[in-house]
Amino acid sequence: MPSMSVNGIPVMQARIARPRVGNWTAELAADADLASQLPPGTPATVHFGSVDYVGTSIRSDAYAQNVTLRVQGGAGGLGKDCAPQFYSQVPASKPLQDALASVGESLSGTSDPQALGKALAFWTTIKQPVSHALTSLAQAAGADVVWRVLPDGSVFFGADGFADSVLTDFELVDFMPLEGLQVISSEDPIVNPGESFSGRNVSVVEHLLSAGKTRTRVWFE
Amino acid sequence: MNLDRTKQGMAKFVAAQSPRVDYLAMYAGTVVAQRGANSFDFQPDDPRIPSLAGIPIKLPFPGFSLTLDPSANSRALLGWVQGDPAQPELRLWEAAGLEAFGLQASQKVSLVAPAVNLGSDPGAEAALMAETYRAAEDTFFTTLITALTTAGAALTAAGAVPTSAAVAPAGAALTATSEALVTFQAATATYLSQVVKNS
Image 1 (cartoon, each protein chain N blue to C red):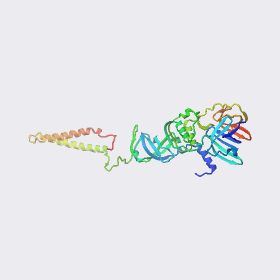
Image 2 (image 1 turned 90 degrees about the vertical axis):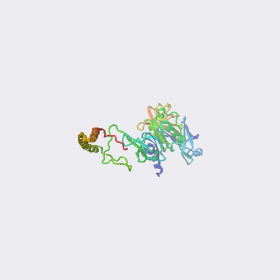
Image 3 (image 1 turned 30 degrees about the vertical axis):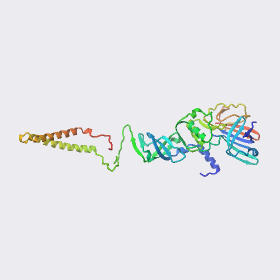
Image 4 (image 1 turned 180 degrees about the vertical axis):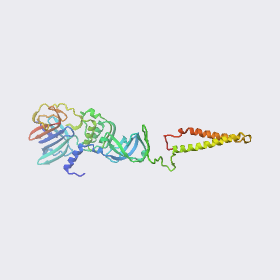
């Protein structure tokens, strides 16, 4: 069973939800003596299997020797407002990078060049949460363009190609066709939203840790 | 808006699904410069909206063009077509600051009303009813030509008598005046135009 930790502190219970569009969140429970130093705004890296999920603590509290913690991907800036800015004759990457940089977030190098290069005769960024501005830009960049925060905390911007997942070492625990859901068990569940898994396009990935066992729920489009 | 914690979460979720809702409204502001034909720089009143440069104005009919006096600080409304941040445009204009107004049509422009005012300066005078005036003028000229021709012929005849030699030139002058009026009348079609200027 893969272990999970936050900033090196063992985690007793966890749920990491990774949607294909938007930011991932992790809700964790750890021993209070170990986890009391993770107030909101603190950088928090959740380690699970072979993946580090780089994020920021957005809520934490302690009760009965347990600290429960919510971590969001990235630097915690996507909910902050971006500054009003007007552009003319720019690629989509320009307002995108300006918005991300203004709140301390970064653009992933794996982003789609075609989406980033979408020519905009005009673009008006009004004062609104950066996440809203990203959604607007994604709509402008193309019908299939999305944004999401990757495990490394950077923002991917582009169209998903649904490439085959590299995960082959897993056990199928349950399959609910009507819900479009598979539950798997794996020592290193490296399946990601935006990929193809078991012949289906992955929409949301949830990693669950409880009572000493881990499961991964793979929701399909 | 004051919301309890549950509704705050729901409100944020709903807002995230409609990030362009604020682009569906129109925002008042001031035109600060003109960049070209029907293209303007605009400063919104709302601090959430940035200043915009070189954006088009949508006018009620095709063929219109505007030239503004930037110092007049004309006011307009800013909007976005289909709520798209990539398609800003100015709409609905307050009248201050118009320097020039053009209307270009490929066939015809008609101004049909019981009264059409061209210019409002204190020294302005009524426009001439050209066709009516020319018709009346023709009548007058015809009468004058007849009288001058008759008088000229009579005086010429009278001047043929040696004791009345000074009369013949008078008759010739009257005849020449009559001929000039005939020439003037013959060019009637050239005196009226469909192209008008105010001064």
